Length: 258
Image (cartoon, rainbow, N blue to C red; front, side, top):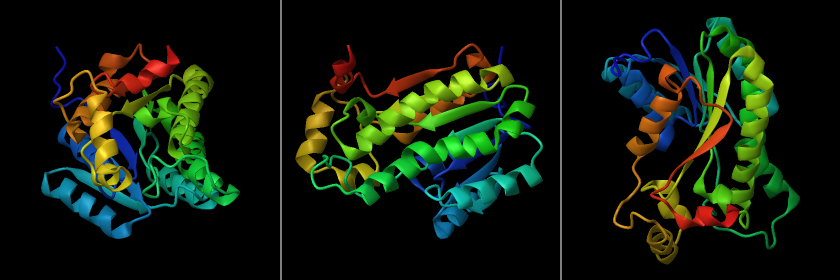
């Protein structure tokens, strides 16, 4: 039997976008199972708060500031990690942006805004994973988890297109990194009770999306996503790669792909 309280003892877990929200929940969840976490974000204050919470809970945390929309910042961050760690067991590409416009369509969107979304939500995760590929390959079982979204199945929004792009990149990364023994998957959360969703969705739209769930009375919580990640990054999921896993109470938004 696997001791699920110690699945990540002695392992290094890197989480981007860890200054709050789901990134913070990932850091705390993996640290609770023994992982030594590296937390990264552009928000230094929130990052320090996350690290303090990990340490207060008895865990180990290192902090790094990084702008996931800037290639030079990503590469400098990766160089720092490589200098400190010979191996990296889990990389969680959680950082993302929505600018409070999760539901914004294409009308009036200029090139710079498109490139800003794509840089952080789609390209940044690949650049970081590629820069840390030697460390992931040095792990007995390196894993990359990309943070997708139910919006990836709604390719009529800016945010959704960038997350659909990340899904496609997840498949490509899995194929490219497979020879090194690195697994690559993505998680697509459904409607979550988070500040970002409350800011980016009107009350009517929030209710409408929740009404599209099969489990209509349920609200997504951070621990739902963290528990899935804890499984997918573990040896229990050793035969799983190249897939996107929905955790969305069966939301019918996914139906468009059928």
